[in-house]
Length: 338
Image (tube, rainbow, N blue to C red; front, side):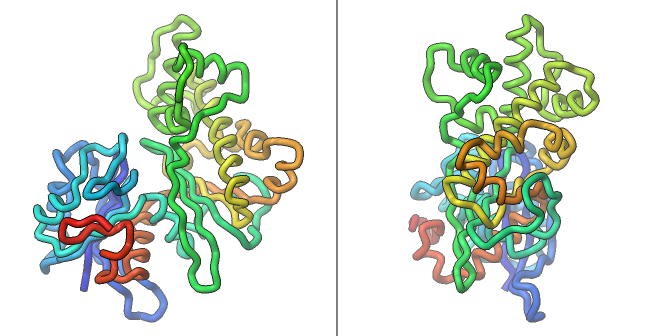
């Protein structure tokens, strides 16, 4: 039976009607797909209802959500979502029998056995990967990451909240930025720097440090100005962003021994690929001394996020079984958290 799969980010929601494929080749089949702006809806239930009203002809009773954040009881907890998500309330509002949930980058990692791994642009390192864990990392509204660990049958995925790790400056300029953001010390998360909003924060901070008023008001405007070399602070902000992303990615690659490679996902990075190539990303990714020998053997690609999140969520759902999802820690059915 068809089911709804949705990839819910802080800015966009990608929603699809899917079913198990019967052609013996594909595992899932997409019947309808649409991208929504989260800010245009007062609640997730209304966003999903808009999709169902437009694209679903027969009643659907099951839904799987790939969401930024983690499941705590009946709620998806994340600072970057457009609205709170309470799963029992969502299930009742849409008349669903079941709502299963997993982390959005966990879903992307489950999509690595499909087009997600085939369509990337090579950034650095060797062009082929060895066997081993594979990382998926993406700066967007927040900073997400997950690791796929290979196994004889399918492998498994570890979600993370790596974006919440403490940011560590590497250069004198980064220390100045950090000192401005936390003048009395304290915790500053990596995603406060390495994300779309983080890029805007870097830009505004650099303007302040130079005694100038910021002229650009969105991350897109900053990246466009950096590409055009029309704003010196925008250029420097992107340079700091790319360098910090390199450090973050190298840290995770060391932590998980990601010899299977790294995929940097998201349209944000794809639109600035040339700047990323020319940046200090690779040097910061490689770190130094003994770590360099390992990290230099890890390939890094940049790939589009696209519909891969809903594909991965659907694959996870079918793989673990619809009826069995109550026993999984991600699933919430009949108002009870796993």
